[in-house]
Length: 308
Ligand SMILES: Nc1ncnc2c1ncn2[C@@H]1O[C@H](COP(=O)(O)OP(=O)(O)OP(=O)(O)O)[C@@H](O)[C@H]1O
Image (cartoon, rainbow, N blue to C red; front, side, top):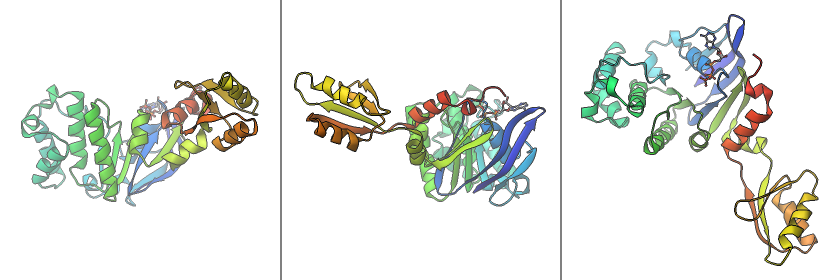
């Protein structure tokens, strides 16, 4: 569990994080969202004791990072996959970390296997690693202490489709084991598939602490695809009816029907029946996390982070 309480960070006159309070709970994947400059990295650095809060606190399993006797066993992290000495092999890097944290060397082989790095790759100097291999090594390091909590900044960066799926499954299985998994990503479609819960920040402040489903439902209007029967002029009659509904927006859908924003499907069905328009299709369309996030970014100055 990660408990963030009234966390504030100022750099001179600039406020990066302001009065953030939230709890990252075990047993689920929590996604951390916010536009560039919102304060995600600053928050994650404070969680790991790499930056000192101006005010407030972060507790990992009830203690501040600096109070953890063996931090790698409590929290595994991946902030910057490039933070590895390029002249060392992946194996040497992990073995060094294990030795300095009292972790048995056999665990190195286990995490290499979990991260999908084979023995030959593990013996190579990391300087020649691709971005994806570097990410895998970073994840191996994060798993080294078999930690109860994992914190990952953009873990799918540089991974191909198979690598992205691998991370998704790994994060879900770690959460299913009862661990706390906290990750940021700017790939909304990926976040929607991976995360159960979301923490959304903008300009250093908390905007949402909610499940992915509730976040989408609360921030999107109902969309419905509706198609009229075959008769001549039926599609246009339907459009006129729909446009007569207060607050409705009607657009042509790529499938040839009308995409209606505003009225719920039941209301559209009633309207069509009352006016004798036969319907061929009436399909609620759920907004994606990407839709909601993009809309939020466009409509909210607070979220856009301008003027700081
Ligand atoms: N060391 C620093 N000195 C001064 N200002 C900083 C420092 N680190 C971060 N900031 C500022 O704090 C704000 C938050 O930055 P932060 O990197 O935490 O955002 P972010 O949400 O992680 O963005 P990104 O997605 O681009 O990494 C920004 O305005 C940034 O310029």
